[in-house]
Image 1 (tube, helix red, strand yellow):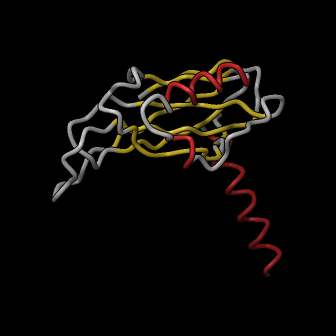
Image 2 (cartoon, one colour):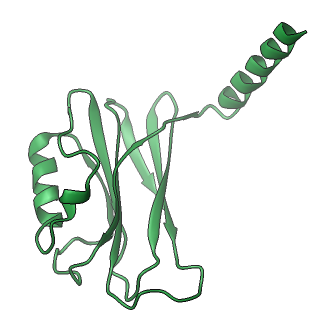
Image 3 (cartoon, helix red, strand yellow):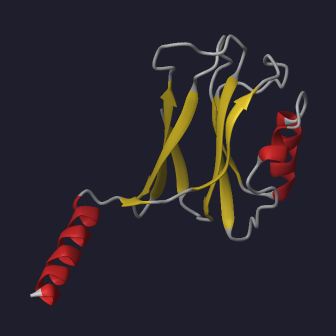
Length: 149
C-alpha cells in the first residue's frame, strides 16, 4: 500500500513539473536588503546577469560606494565556472519596507527570471531613503536569460 502511494505521488509530481513545460530553478541567495546611500551608488532599477569575476567585482564595488554593503553578503566569492549571478535592483524609495523576491523557471531554450517587487503592507515604516536589491546565484547555463517583472 505504501509503495503504491509513493509511486502515485511521484507520478503526480512529475506530471505537474512537465505539464507546462517549465522546470523550477532554485536560486541561492547571496544578498537581500536595501542600499542606504540615498541613491549615491548610481544604480538604476535593473535586472542583470553577472557571468564573470570582473563584472562581479565591479558590481560589488559600486554597491559599496557609500556603505560596506558586501560585508553582509552570505557569499563574496562566486565560482563562475559553476554559477552565474542574477542581481535585481528596485527604484530608490522614500521609506523602508520595500523588498524583492524572485521566481526562476526554465524550459529547453531559456531561463525565465521574474522579479517580484513588494511594497510596505502598511503600518509604521522607517522614513529613510532605501533601494531594495536581491542577488542570487543559479547554476551556470548557456541558455538565454529572459527577465520580467
